[in-house]
Image 1 (spheres, helix red, strand yellow):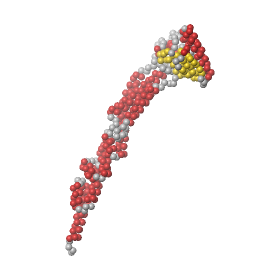
Image 2 (spheres, one colour; image 1 turned 90 degrees about the vertical axis):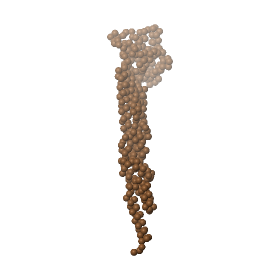
Image 3 (cartoon, one colour; image 1 turned 120 degrees about the vertical axis):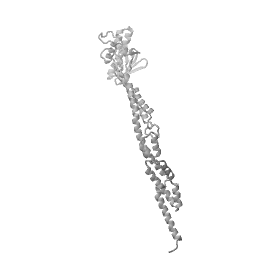
Image 4 (cartoon, rainbow, N blue to C red; image 1 turned 60 degrees about the vertical axis):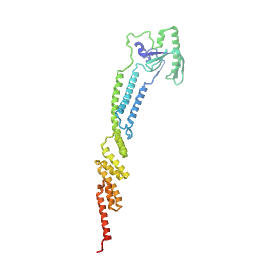
Length: 377
């Protein structure tokens, strides 16, 4: 077994090998098995992995009222860009790798010549002499299996059983020929059996410059270019992602409608002015109303004298004051009403009701005095 770098061979041997693989010159292959089209799975896998990472980073904290990353900071936007750039570079590397493999001047596969088996699936050929053949057999359905020393087994598909049997017989005959060439040290016969050996005669008009390995110049700058573009796009995605995340934060905070949810929206970085001026005060007011504490309502009213929902606050305080006034009126005394007004700084909101209650009590007192102490006329 030997290794041969095709692109280090002289040009006339390169041309001879290509023509031999095509079957247009001797030695013609006894059997051929072409390899599947090259797919750069490693680079594809890396690209997919980095795309998944980009997606996970974009989803991290997205629209979550309880996450500090609901609106991505600068460092996280840079992480979006780096992950997307890595995916783009992997895609570019994979494209360059595929281009190189598909632009080779020979087909990738296994070529069984009379003197050697040549594995061209890698840039450096593996060449196994037919003299090391241990077994050749047909295994049905036109298949030919050949085994070499060292546990190297290969299988070739022929047209039918008859073709497979002819290939087997030709291979066994070729083995005898190679052994005879080695015994006689016959270079001419060896060259007739092995397309990678120096031929006895070569075309003097053929090109002298060897074929070079395909290396497109764009493979050097393309990964960097697409990586830079992807980095900028990824950072830009951070802004788009924050815009969409803010919308979801707002929708969730409004749907919950609690002070905690609205505070969380503001803490996450939400900047909608109506949350601070209207929605949050309204939610806080509703929470106080559910608690039913007049003192808390009055304190809230005093703490927010210029609130945008001033009228709603006054209305809530007034409703609570009316309930407290009802309790005070049950005492049926002017002192109870005076105590009510002294206890509640916002009593002006129900001043008319207090005065009406006071007049009612005075009228009842006057009627009682007249009834109990006035002499009959």
